[in-house]
Length: 638
Image (cartoon, rainbow, N blue to C red; front, side):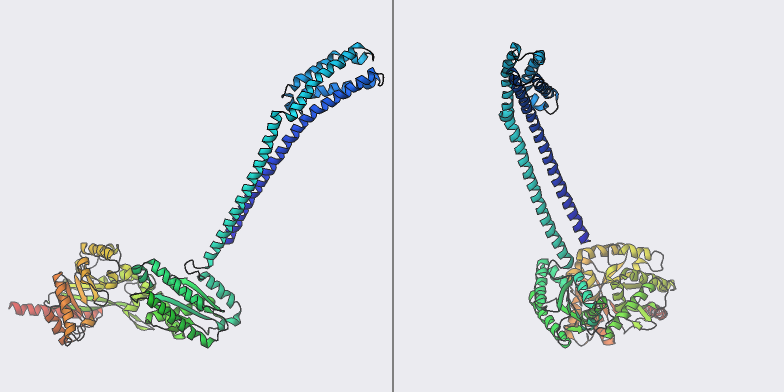
C-alpha cells in the first residue's frame, strides 16, 4: 500500500514537471514565432527597397543605352508588385502601421502610377524619365528613414527588450519550477523513508516493531531446517501503567528508552530485538550462540532490566516478567513460536515469578484448557438452567437478630472433564474473553429462577448478595439490574451488590455516580474483602457503602491475636460512626464468633454457620433458620 502511494506521488510530480516543460516549450515556440514574424516584416521593407533600387538601376542603364526596354520594364513590374505586396500583404502589416511606412510607400506607388506610360513607352532621353528618377530618389529617403526606425528606433528597441525580458523571466520561472519540483521530490523521498521507518519500527524506542519481527521470523523459518535453532523470548513490564499514571508519561517513556537501549546493546549478531507492545519487548535468537547458553543469557538480561526498573520506579511496583520458548518442532509456524513464548510469559505473570520461564507442554495443555473453557462458558451463559453452571448460596447471619437472613450467591462450575472450576477462574475467563457483562446477567437471571420456588414467608425476609466483575461496573449497571429483576420474585431492596476495592477505587468519581444510581433504585452496595487492597476510610465516607465486609484474613485467630482484634474493632467502630454495617467473613469456630460478636460486628459469614450450599440445601437451611427464629420469638412473647 505504501509503495502504491509512493508511485502515485511520483506520477503526479512527473506529470507536473512534464506539463511545466511543455508550457515553457510552447511559450518559447510562440516567442520565436513572434520574432520570426517581426523579422519577416522587416525583411518585406528591406526587400521593397532592394527591388526599387534594382528598378532605379535598370532605369539608369536604359537611359544610358546599356539596357533594353524589356529589361527595364521587367524591373518596373517587379518593383510595382513589391509595392503592392507591401501595402496589402499580411507579412508587412505590423511594419506598415508604424513610422508612417504606408504613407512613404504609398507616395512611391503614386509615382509609379503617374509615370507608368512614360516607363512603358518612353525613350531613353525622355525628360519624363529623368523627372521620375529624381522624384523616386527623393521619396526613397522616406523609406530608408522607416527602415532605420524599424530596426533602431525606440519602439523596436523596447519591443526587443520586452521580448528578451519575457524570455529571461520564462527561464527563471522554469528554473524555479524545476527547483520546487526537486524540493518536492526530496520532501517526498524523506516522507516515504519516514513512513517506511514507522511501518517497520517503533518511533519511541527506535526498535523494530511487531510487523518487522514477524517478517524477520518468516524469512528465517522459510528454511525448515532452521526452525529448531530458534529461541523466542517475550518480556513484559508488570504494572507499568501505574508508572505512567503516578509519575507521568515522560517518565514512563524515558524508562522504555533506557530499557530499549539496554536490549539493543545486548542484541548482537543473530539476536533480533523488537518492541511488540506498549510495555512488551521480544527477542529472537537465531545466531551462532549455543542453545544451552541462551536461557542463562536471557535470565541475565532480565536481571539487568529489573535493576533498571527498580531504580526508575520509587515505589518499586513495576516488575519484569519473561517467557521463552525454544527446541520447537520443524513444523511449527512463526505465529506458534510466538504463542508458545506468550504462554510462558502468561505463566510467569500469573505466578508472579521473578525469573525467565521456559515454555513446556504442560503450559500448552493449560492454555488449551483455558481456550476450551472460554468457548464452553460462552455457550453456557446463554442457558439459565444449564446444569453445569449453578449458584451456591452461603448464609450471612445477623448477630443480634434472627428475623432476617442474608446469603451470598457464588457461581459454581462442575465440568464433566475438568471437574470443579474455581469461581475466580470463571470470572477471569469471562473478563479475558469479553463475557463479564454476560456472566453478570446470567447470575441475576439464575438467582431469580432459583428463588422463584421459595415460599413467600421464606423469601420476604431474605436478602441476596451478588459479586460484580470489572466490566459490569459502568453507568448502565442500575438500568440493567432494574430490567433483569423487574419480573422476578426478589425485590430490588433485597439485593446487595458487592464490589471489591480494586473495582470501586479505580475511579472514585465514576464509582460515586454508579453507587448513587444503584441506591436510587433501592439496591444496596457492599465493599467486599476490605483490608486486602488500598483500603482507606476516606473512601467509605465518599462512596456511601451500606456494608463493609472484613476479609477472612483478619478474622482468622482473632480470638488469640490482640492486634488482629484491635484492628477489626477499629474498623467496626469507625464504620458504625459512618452508618455502615460490618460483616465478618470466614468465621469458622465458636471462639472467632464470640470475638466478633463482642467487638460488635453486625453480620457473620463463614463455615461456622454454613458452607456455600446448593439450592435445595439452602432452601432447607432457610426453613430451619426461620423456624428456629419463630420458636425464639414465641418463647420471648410467652
